[in-house]
Image 1 (cartoon, rainbow, N blue to C red):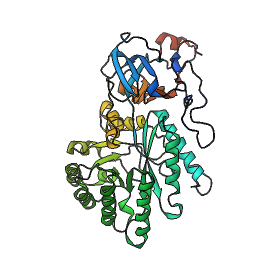
Image 2: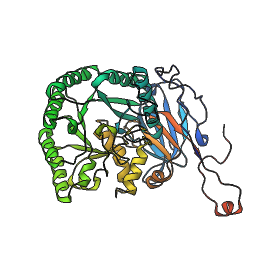
Image 3: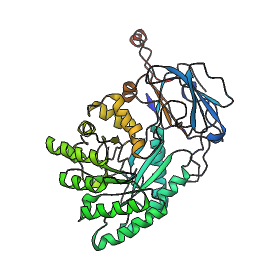
Image 4: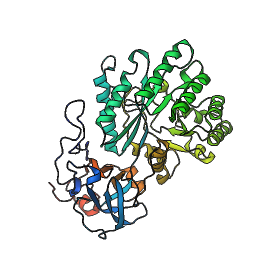
Amino acid sequence: MSDSQPPQPSHSPRKSPTGSGPGQGQGQGHGPEGAQGSPGPVTPESSTLLLVGARLTDGRTVDVRLGGGRIQAVGTAGSLPAATGSRVDLSGYLLLPAPAEPHSHGDTALTADSEGPVSYSHDEVQRRATEAALLQLGHGATAVRSHVRIGDVHGLGPLEAVLQARRSLRGLTDLTAVAVPRLLTGVAGADGLAMLRDAVKMGASVIGGCPDLDPDPTGFLEAVLELAAEHGCPVDLHTDGDDPARLSRLATMAGGLRPGVSIGPCGGLSRLPLDVATRAADRLASAGVRVTCLPQGDCAALERRGLRTAPVRLLRAAGVRVAAGSGALRDAGNPVGRGDPLEAAYLLASQGGLRATEAYHLVAGAAREAMGLPEVRVEAGFPAELLAVRGDRIASVLSLAYSRIVIHRGRVVARTSAVREYCDSAVAVALDLPRQGRTEPGP
């Protein structure tokens, strides 16, 4: 069996920082399993795309027509008239709303194998952030929220590089930046607060940070929430969640803030006594504070490793809105992190006690909601942010999610094709063992 990174789409509005555009390297014609319709140099607004023979989670097999970046029509197989645009055969694929990644670190991604100190030059950070976003896009995440450290010796340089990566990726994936200051109180915090204000002016659309690491966590929260209210920005904070008194203060202070407050990964909540954790969850729910859990493990921003993931079932039972992210992508927080939303869903289903459909919702619909993105359904009128995975139901694709086709703004932007073959033994033939991939040679 092979599982390779998909070739890049054939058109991109900007060149990558390495000089070869992210869209180079794929010609038009046939995709994996003989699927036709690799997009040419056109915009989603000027083209249509017909998805043929896709299976939905309710068991129906449908055709789906996309245009103008949205789903135009969904009909029974063969019911939609052929259009002048492209056509993709999704026979054998399950069609889902695309995942989103609410918690990544593009500035530190892919640094686990670095020899010596990690470089934070503009070009290196931009390259890492771009590569990380494309890896996550290949897994299916058409929107990524990247937490970026600011301050210390690097100042605003990493943020500027990630914002440049965001511009270069426009049309392929939606990348947003969270400004993450280290300190916001005391003498040292004055510089951090000034830099945080500059970060918002530069284009950071979310305000973050880690109150746990500030000498005055309450003062840190006050500064962040005041600035967020001033600029109308959402807040997304790192916390282990192991201090119920601190969580209670956060809930009291954050209640009513619009467009909202998210915290994570909150693995420490799982280490609290059940009654204490339940009361903390109730307070978070009453205040409308969201929790983003990281089933694959904590990230390096907390500078410590939690023993468990957040108690997702307890939080959801209390009414807390929970999303799931991937966290570290091959950096100090997780040297083998994959940045794969479907792996996060798999872990929630296999170890977190959630049904497969619930687990997928946390990395798709709930993640998009946490990021302030519009809802996606496979219905007419909704955004064409879709993921097709070879399989017939969500449980099967979480178990063996190899071949994937990713659609962003109504066009195919990434493909991963995996082929499983067995030797020509009598046993394999007699059992008719399943294979992934096309059964006939393709172009």
